[in-house]
Amino acid sequence: MRLTAYTDYTLRTLMYLGVHRDRLVTIQDIADLHSISKNHLMKVVHQLGLSGIVETVRGRNGGLRLAREPAEINIGAVVRETENDFFMAECFSQENNTCPLTPDCLLKAKLGQATAAFLAVLDTVTLAAILEPAGHAPALAAGVIPLHLAK
Image (cartoon, rainbow, N blue to C red):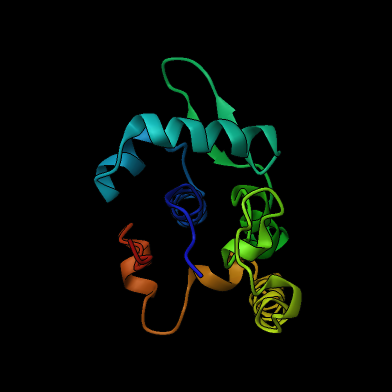
């Protein structure tokens, strides 16, 4: 399973905000750190604001910050909000499924179970739990977030 860049950017944003709770953060701060598009991050932050996870402050000295405590932000819920589907294979799509094996295939059920297990693990994780993983606290404190998803 591969998470989209949008989900990757969402998680990076939340982690950065979680580490820098003492100040307002700008979208540019996050974009510069990760060398990613400010425009993409604006979409991410807008959605995080609509969901109530992030508070945005407008104006000259504005920025963004977490609107909730990190322990209240469930990673499984965030991933569900940011991913548009969890289709592991073509057969998961009723509109685009052309596989002739679908009526007798047992693999689809197993892939569905694997996806459910993946999400069940993420449901046990909060933002607080990933802010200081063993051995990475100095990197997180410096704003370097060791999160890299397959491209």
